[in-house]
Image (cartoon, rainbow, N blue to C red; front, side, top):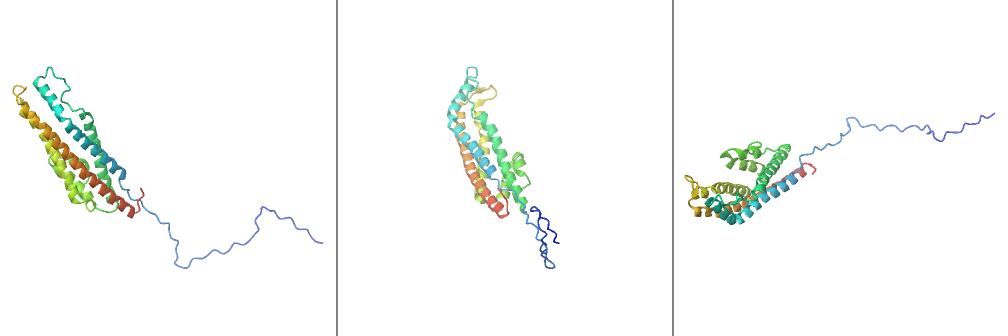
Length: 246
């Protein structure tokens, strides 16, 4: 007598033996996944904004030079007859924004310099110049005529030519010196024993001084823009070569 077979469950996998697992040859090891450590990216955004804000400061200087003759006449009126002159006469309206803009441009430039220094350190390169000098070097009396340049040269060596770095710094120092000299015509015009305007013509020197200061700052910015552009491009190439993502 034949025993009928039970119907096979269609949802049950047949008992098929698995193929033998491939054996690795002796001494072979599995290759671990390749891990790429990302390096700090090139400071492209900081470079853009540092260039824009420092350029805006230079542009305000030129506008101030254009309006200097009108302010000169108002200043003479204030000193000649302080009681009847307007309290706002002789004041530069751009001064309300030039101060905060100058601070913002300094912060952005220092951030860019600091980012370049950090990227170099991450690649094992030694950046020249004193550490973090881009932040504190500007405030050292007399040393601020040298320290910021050393910091900039330290991070731009091999990326931007020493000529344009010197062009930036020499013209900027000239801007500083000429700006300080702008107070001397006022001292020469006023008799401080009486407080009266004794030599009004001495104030005429403020106009060419303002122009000299503005032109020096504009030239300095032109060199600085080239330094930032060339250094950032070199950093971008170095970051790509070292597997950074940006």
